[in-house]
Image 1 (cartoon, helix red, strand yellow):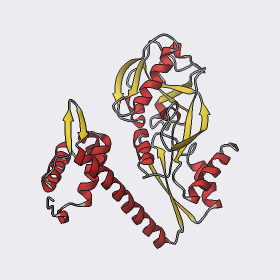
Image 2 (cartoon, one colour; image 1 turned 30 degrees about the vertical axis):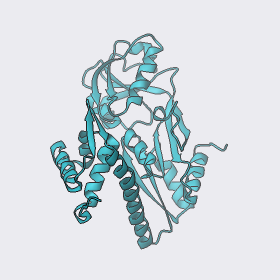
Image 3 (cartoon, rainbow, N blue to C red; image 1 turned 180 degrees about the horizontal axis):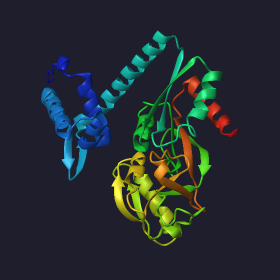
Image 4 (cartoon, rainbow, N blue to C red; image 1 turned 90 degrees about the vertical axis):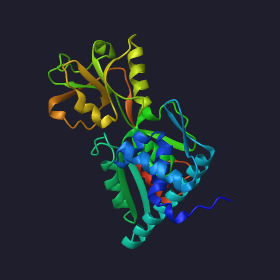
Length: 307
């Protein structure tokens, strides 16, 4: 048996390793921790040296776990999750709350149209349930749900539509058309509604498939109905970045009425006919917290879903 002084392995090192394993990318994990890529790489090499084992191997541009790394990832992920849950429960006990939920919401949603109309009446009905709200990009809150870091999430419909995620239940809540967001100086800005055909010559801003391939698939599907491929001139890392990248009068990106446009005064959103968008509530089927069941039921009632 190889001897390792575990006193030198910190929780921070474990967290760094687990995130890199989840993202399969040192660069993306470094962005999550607000670190530089070389700094995080150095921390991983230090951990491997302490453990005297290789945790990752590279195949082309892909970062893969070694068998030893895969074993530690599964084990450490569960332990870190348990520690976080224990700390959260300790806070609950300290503040006098008896139950708690973590709810994550897409950071590009307008809170007044998605989560706030749910939270306010729920906390009035169930004052003993403490709710912590987190916001992040679609790919990150989906990961939070899959890893058990969030009890429920509010996210975009296209991120779950057509998928079979093991152990995940979801329901559509908001329902609306897609919208084309553009500068008010765009030639199309005065229209009350558009067809995707009207956007054949548009320059599209798109979330990079490296981060959210579902957005690219949604955009390509909308355009394919009218026999063209989108002319993508700029990729961004998240939905919240789309609005900051409308630069020319021909630029456009696809969103819906739930999107929080941080530059709304300079932009307009025009509904796109014969399209369907919206958002969903998703939760894990194996999460048996009674307060989660109460939360799901109340959310569905708030949106008029009774079946």
